[in-house]
Amino acid sequence: MAYIKVSGPKLVDSDGNEIILRGAGLGGWMNMENFISGYPGCEFQIRAALAEVVGTAKSELFFDKFLEYFFLEEDAAFFKSLGLNCIRLPFNYRHFEDDMNPRVLKPEGFKHLDRVIDLCSKHGIYTILDLHTAPGGQNTDWHSDAGTHIANFWVHKDHQDRTIWLWQELAKHYKDNTWIAGYNPLNEPTDPYHTRVIDFYDRVYAAIREIDPQHAIFLDGNTFASDFSHFGDAHKRWENTAYSIHDYSVFGFPNSPEPYVGSDTQKRRLRRSYEKKRQWMDERGLCVWNGEWGPVYARKQYEGEKTEAINEQRYRVLRDQLAIYNQDRLSWSIWLYKDIGFQGMVHVSLDTPYMTLFKDFLAKKHRLAVDAWGADESWVRPKYQPLIDLINQEIPSEFQALYPAPVWKLSDRIGRLSRNILVSEFLVKEWAEHFRGKTEQEIDEIAQSFKFDKCLHRDGLNKILNENAQLVAKSA
Image 1 (cartoon, helix red, strand yellow):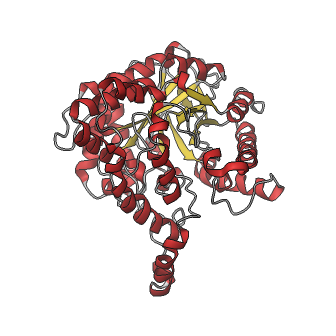
Image 2 (image 1 turned 90 degrees about the vertical axis):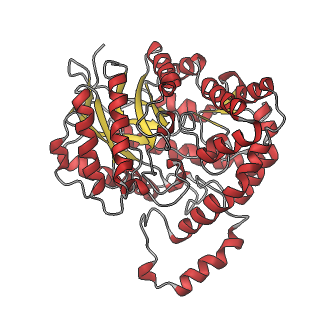
């Protein structure tokens, strides 16, 4: 078994044969996310709140069992049965060190990561290691687990130094594992100056290569893996390196500007957005990996009789994006494998202990639109519109486009700060209170809700992925 390598615009095996990676991200697992597993706010907040309610031992039991049950051998076997060959593994730095005890490795951090990498290799599935959450928060969104909209990773050198240290520890541990397709050192950076991300990539590249000269490295573009316009000739310093875009389409979300019917105009918009993200690489003949993409889906408990029609539109977006990727022989990792029903290939059944326990709470979260990802803001929009109107009235338009505009519009920024941070904080303890008085056995049963045999399959999505698993244009 040989390492996967980057050769020009392709990933190849030891004989130079092209390898196209197709798979999904194991989002919500070693980097928990609120819309994936149902909690409010950030992971560090719910971990602290749960420990306060049930004590450290029971809290650690829940999270450890959650990590165990979230991905088991049945998951790996199912994933492989669809013809998919790679899983991106997002993880949180907090598994490996504590903020109050930096640069002291927590060996237990490797427990579940090793287990899933081994399960995947057993079933012939490559993995890509993705640092989804770095100290200080490398981006302005909730999934960097910083509890703020300020990406402090870029303004405190020690955050970056700790991340360099962590990647060296990871490289020491995994340098000989050829089932790991490569390292994704930093998920979705948002550096408003566009230069510090390049400086950090220089540092992390050198640090990894000092220990591991073999594994491919996948570098995300700036501004949520969408912008390479300031990378210049930096690629000349980075060997065996591919470049990661995240190609989400607005047509796949509740805020779509119009129903998606697959018109020529809409398909051109899909391709134009995608081509803009990869333009820098194409001009230089570099390798592109689509590390995240994919629509979200309606749920009957919220969208009712509209659910099926909405999801048929989303599947159409999915097919049309895949048609573009197949033409370009693109490697991709759809977001995501498992969740509680919004985007996953498999999702936790509504009759499980977890979903039953949190039924009313999840409905409240949906109504209040406290999760940023694909939120339906219709119920709360009238509550926030006066604040949007006030800022539009009082702040000159030339000062309204704060970074990361245009990815975040003015209304998006207000939503991030007011709903996803402020209102979410008030819900954290309420989430944790659901566990009060639970025995260890009950806590284990709640965590078991995330096991494969307790999940339903999103057959429409999985059928399309299976049909496209081997479908690509002929190589030139």
